[in-house]
Image 1: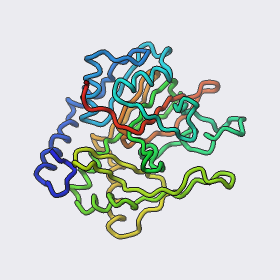
Image 2 (image 1 turned 90 degrees about the vertical axis):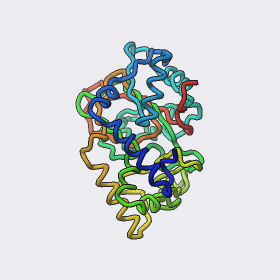
Image 3 (image 1 turned 45 degrees about the vertical axis):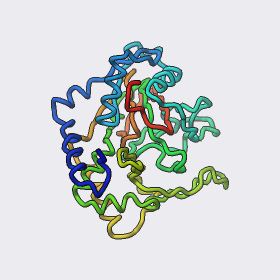
Length: 301
């Protein structure tokens, strides 16, 4: 099957019907039950199969660690290796082990704390995006693990959307929208300059990236208004307007979930967002995040 080949309409429609069937109430009830993972990141054979099967269908999977106090960055690495994730993204705010601690740093007294400049390291809401949309294309983020170590006292709910669903809806609306969003310069991110030094050059990319055999789709996108330059032609602007409408739609395929302590998500870099949140004094919301340059493997062996 070649679901992302624009010239293969029958193959696309067959795939689209299967994809949408995954979002029946019955199937979603099962999907929303997190897969159990041990504190050291190990998966049983049955749960490894279940996790990979869910990611094949939805491009993400929720998990839960019963003994979560013992789950740490080493556990994430062990978990990641079992599903084929190896190449960690060395982003600006990652620790030496290339894994990031996501928490509110707005009141940090450390002048050297780079995280204070970026919205994820605050209590503010995050709009729909994929991780690393600003990375050079050869370092594109294709998967990540996001683990809740300490939930917020209020708020902080996440939303998740499989990019394949957005592609499906846009293509059914108008296949020309897909052509526009596959242009390799449709989205430009200006260079990142700090203290007069360029720490990231300007990047340009498509929104949708499709493999040569038309079997795998990835997405790079941010709903942010600032620091993104979109192609200013009528079809691109219509496609973006349609995309915005889909993201704002309260549809069954938009999964809202408030991760609890010891819960997390593993995904092929799906679209996600975060509500604003509040912390209790002395008890900050803390997430652990690992980003990868490769996708989750699609088979158990």
